[in-house]
Amino acid sequence: MRQTHTLERLKAALVPGQVYRRSDLTRLSSNVDRHLAQLVREGSLKKLSQGMYAAPKNTVFGEAPPEEHSLLQSFLKDDHFVVYGLSQFNALGLGTTQLYNSRIVFNRKRVGEFTLGSRTYLFHRWREAPKSLTAEFLVVELLSRLNELVEDRVQILERLRDKLPQFNARRLLHASRHYATLSTQRKLEDLLKNKTAATAA
Image (tube, rainbow, N blue to C red):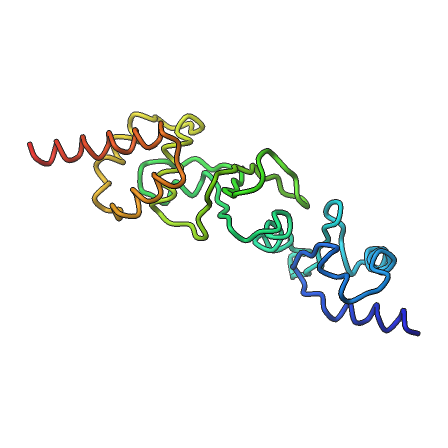
């Protein structure tokens, strides 16, 4: 009877779409491995990887993938990260239109490619990671990943130079200094200098 009560308590604590580590659920069960196995068998949880589980969320279109922030936070054991796709560069108005499937996680802990659930992520580790995605951070990432884009890179840089005044200069410099390599920092500095020189002329 106690086992049944504990199992029901575990079920009641699960939020559809959320991801849990084994350690998240140990406070609710004195025999967590047995209960996790039971919950997986009956479909109340899905095992994503060793020690990681998702509570399924059903929609009119079928089962939804786990909530992304919860998935990545559980994987990293940290909420200091941002995730984005190269397709989000298209919103910067620099002439990029290509759609990309890759998802990049800029974080402080992991590096490499990992498949979590049904999604594949490229983890980029840096000494710091922003807690929110800004247009200025995306500009800096675009400069860092310019060689990965299929569009004309010269045209992208020309458009970026023309549109630089539309971005917040302080946030651009902050993103460059904190999240970019020296090579990317120089690219941005050159663009800023060329824009200043062109304006002065």
